Image (cartoon, rainbow, N blue to C red; front, side, top):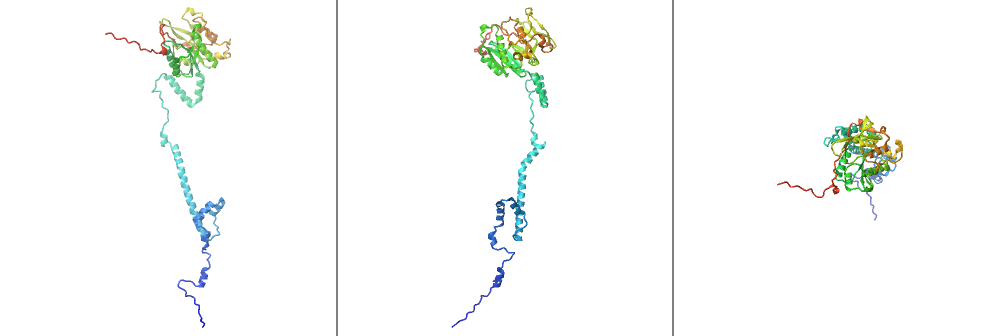
Length: 421
């Protein structure tokens, strides 16, 4: 038997949709976001990072940031534009803050440098003068040095020109030999030369070899020096000092030293003004020397008589020496060293080297040497003006029976005399 079944659709429940309604709801709305959008487009933060690091063309990055047109729906482009504005605002703020922090040290340094009342200006780097605390040996010389230094700071050419004009090299030649008071003589002369203004060259000449004692004094003198040796047999010579001075003259001529040569015996006393006066010598200068007699009873004058700087005569103490051409002492003159190695400059009549002679009679050695240097008094300069001051003293201190201890020191102490009871 056939049965008839009626197909019944289920009753719609409350909240469910019918078939027509489902069709209407299945139609996508143009304003709705399809489900596939979540798959094709990443989140907003991911899009921002990918756009910043993925774009290789700078123009594409600029257009993507500032372009107002978009193929996407209106609400998405507006939301993306707001995100970009926030990112750019944060980036700009961070950039300004970092720039201010980075420039802060330089701004503070500029302010402290330009502000005269800043702490950095409180330090003073002035030069402290110690002249008042030291031993004042020559106030005039110190004042002149300070005045010259002040002038040189304002005009440096003044100091250079003045030094070239007045500060000639002084070449002091001293023959020496071993005897009891040699150390005393050399030390006294060393202190005198140390007080003279530079430049100054001290040439010490010994016989046969350089002694340790003389070398030690020269090293400790703080004076520029040269230690020479005269290798001659003492039995064949008459005056050792003549040959020692010739060794120095040969050294000056060989090395062409340019300056004023002066023969300074170690046992004389010298004024500091002498070394300053010698720097005014052009060719040949001479001055008066006070000489002690052998009996030590009086002093006599040896040297020129001057009218201003012109030599017009000579002091004469012994009648036996009246036949000498020039009445000067060995320590009473100085001359230009270029006369040794440049005779044409001074129109010397002969080209023979200027040397002292050992064969000349006693008392005539100085005069014969001067005759090889200058022709007459017209080429001489009297120092100082009018030859009015004594600047050199020849003293007789040693006795003939003194002995020379080794290395200038006595090994045994002196005997002590006990007092009488």
